[in-house]
Amino acid sequence: MSRFGRTALYPALFLTVAGLAGCSPKVNSVQPPKEWFNIIYVATAYSEAETRLGHAPKNVEELKPYLQKFGNPDELLVSPNDGLPFVVNWGNASKGSGYSIVAYEQKGKEGKRQIIDTRVMPWKMSDEEFTKRNLATPAVDNKSSDKAENGK
Image 1 (spheres, helix red, strand yellow):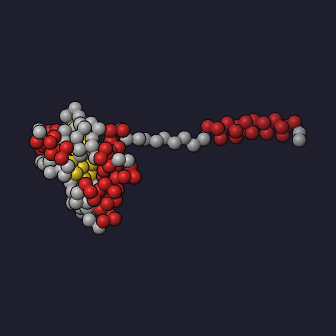
Image 2 (image 1 turned 60 degrees about the horizontal axis):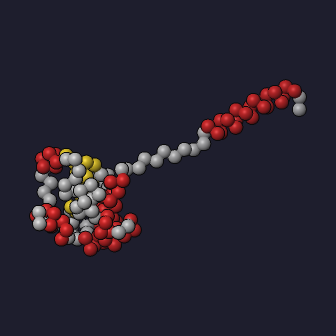
Image 3 (image 1 turned 30 degrees about the vertical axis):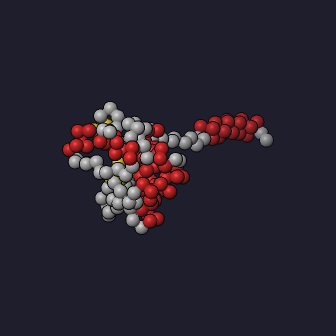
């Protein structure tokens, strides 16, 4: 190889290697806050239960088998923010393009509650907005939440 050929080859090789090193794939993973995982699991399990059962789950016993793959269902049904069971809208089927609320926190934290709908995308809502939207707390079918709601 001639001197000119080597002179041109070395810089080209260097730039190729440098370019490849700079283009290595980096995964930018955006994780939701850890406090949202339980409610996301509840909504995901709710959606799967609705699909497999042919109807929206009617109670916690119909939902629990679908929650097990995420962990202990009894723990997942409790909000890490307020320590109370999530309020789940049992039997509330997904309808067309509308997004039904699946679950929300009873009290939340710092004046905001986690809410999740059939899109399985959680968000926070202020207590004021929650009241304006008239999201009444339906009966929750376990004794710990009844005690919390009734102050017993």
